[in-house]
View 1 (cartoon, rainbow, N blue to C red):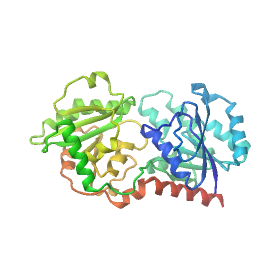
View 2: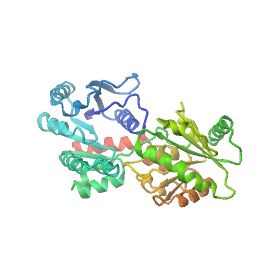
View 3: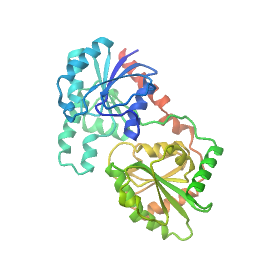
View 4: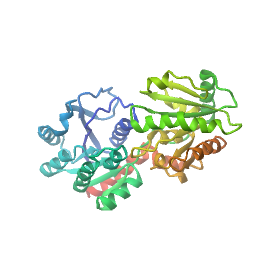
Length: 373
């Protein structure tokens, strides 16, 4: 059994958004197979239910990313815990991971949530190439590389010139391994219809996210300015779009819409996924896998996504429940929403083989074990 120091350079507990859940849940499930000790920032709030030890040693200052003294703190932890591996999330602490590998006789694992350089390129940052080159160096110095999508892994092997034998796909996951029963879905639909006064002949559409994240904010504007008007032109289609999540701009929250319900933050977003007829994902920017799409399909909700927004989710695993439009073809996107509202199918077992945390982290654990021999 390996002992792994998981370095997370930012607050992720309690886990609220998709990126934070990706770290917290990976660590929780992976720690069932190998000893894992998390090292992160002081800003994390521990509940005691993490399932593994978390040490809060990094400051909350942005200067933590260049603080060389953390090398000595982590070297001490590695010796005390008799660690065999160090795992870093993202490439930002690449320099630290490389130093620890070089001086502490341990293996370095880099877990990529996106190809970060490309993500920043899509967001228009001029310095993306500098980060891309640093990211390349970090992955090349790693002993093992975990990528969140098959597309990212293929890109990194080809463009970072990585050894495929040192790479695996370690995708975002969900905590249930089968679709909810039909009575549970019906109960959730009834709740949403009653709470928001939605008629029985109106299809419930859903979009959810943290709208402080620019790709989500842009997608929300697209829903309001383009997709909703396109749907209004589709004669005979009745619907309501529920928007839930945090950091919705005030000008949107205070506006009145005929077919859009601004729910804002909700305590149980799973209830909304179970009750919706179609999850819509008009996200065009950013990198990595869109975690809410993974969750929606896992709740047996039909979904429509742009091609960019569906990266990492193979429609062949979804039994016709995921329909994908060309990027920026919003009239076609609206047509697919109507088609999805008429789809009667269940998410198949193969979907959970790819996205249930219990299965995916076991594969990662076996990957580590096989390479320790």
